[in-house]
Length: 286
Image (tube, rainbow, N blue to C red; front, top):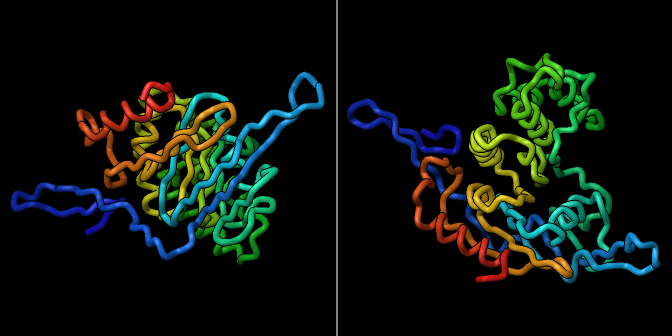
C-alpha cells in the first residue's frame, strides 16, 4: 500500500515497514517542463553612472516533469533572479525561457510560488487566503471549496482553517503559504528560500513535510537555497552557480530516492560526498 510517498507494508510480527519509492522517471523524449536557453539579465549600476552590470550570463538549463531542482551558490550568483525569470516575475534581457512548452511572458497560469516569507493576507483566515488564490479561476464555488479542503488536509492545517495568520506559528504560516501555492494544482512550483526564517528544528520537520507533500502532488519544483544539506535533502539535481557574472557552474545528480527522511540520511556516505562536492565547488576548492 502507498501512503505519503512511501510503500507501506507489515512484516510477520505486524510491524510497519516503509520504503521510499523512486523519484519520478524522466523520459528523455518528452520536452522539458522548464527550458532555459541562453538567458541573461542586466541591471543598472547603483552609482547612477548609466552603466549596467550583468547579473546572469548565458544560462541554459532544462528541468523535466516531476523533477526537484535546487539552485545554490554564493550570494550574488543570481539564484533568485533566475527563479524570478523562470516564474515570469522578471523578464530576461536575452535568451528564451519556456514553461510547459510556452514562452514565459508574464506569470504563467500553471505555476505556484512560495516566498521567503509567507505573505499571507493578515485580515483573512487560512481558508480565505487559499480561496483568494482561486479568485480569478472560473470554477464553481463548491469546486473551489473542495480544492481548498484538499490542500488543508494535505498540509495538515484542516483544524486551523478558520485561524488568522497572526494566530499561527512560523512553521504553520509557511505550510499555509505552501497550501496557497498548491491550491490551483500548478504544473510547476517555485520556492525562494521558504524556510530560511525558521529555527533549525522547525526547519528540519517542515522539510520532511514539504518533501512528502510535493512528492504526492508530483509538481515540478525549483528551490533557491543557501543550505547545502537542504539542497541534498530535497533534490534530484543540484544546480551550483558561480558569480561575476552569475552562471551555471555544474549540475550534480543526487542518486537517492525521494521523498527522504533525515533519519535515513544521517551517516550516509553518499550524502557526505555530495556535501563535500557542492561546498568545494561553491568555495572554489573542488
